[in-house]
Length: 42
Image 1 (cartoon, helix red, strand yellow):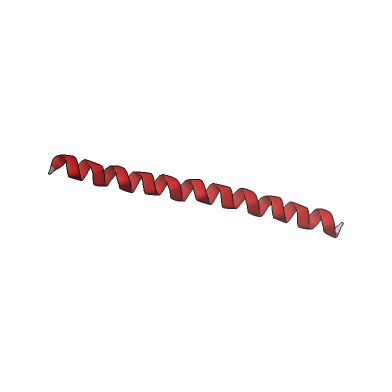
Image 2: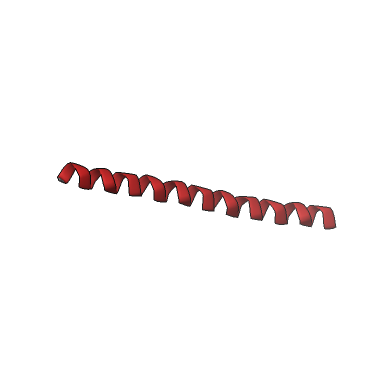
């Protein structure tokens, strides 16, 4: 029972970590695109 519970928590933690990485990557890409647009405008 404890082993299944720990496995479930582990899978949930990995899923949340993967989702957070994608979110941070998306924010980085958005900031980069704003910087590039600024460079083109100047």
